[in-house]
Length: 159
Image (cartoon, rainbow, N blue to C red; front, top):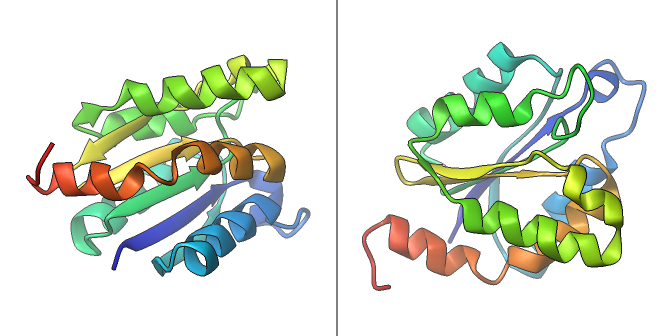
C-alpha cells in the first residue's frame, strides 16, 4: 500500500473562492484507479513557509511515500511551490519534471512554462504538478506507472 498526500497550493482555493478540481482529480486517480491510501489532503495559500511546513510534516512525521502538489508552478508573482520544494528535498529527480514538460508540450505548448520540480526527502517522493485540473491529470497520467518502482528504489530495492 502506498501512502500518499495531495497538497493544493492556491490562494483562491484556500479562501473558498475556487473549487479545488485539480486536487480532487488527483485524489480520485490515486485512490480509485491505483488503490493508494490517501493519508493527507489539504489546501493552503501560496506561501513558501506554509508549503515547506506541510512538506516537512508529511514526509518527516507522517512518513508518506508520495506527496503530489498541485498549483503554484507558473510564472506568477505568488507561484512559489518549486522554491519551497527545493528547500525541503535532498535529491532532485529532474527526469520526472522533464518528462512532464516534454510530453505536456505535445498537448499544450504552454506546458514548458511550468517550473515544477520533483525530488526525494527521506523515503518520500515529492512531485509538483500544474494547478489546472487538466494539467494535473495529464501530468500524473504520464508518470503514475513509474511511481511504485521509484518508491521501491528510494527504499533501497532493486533497480
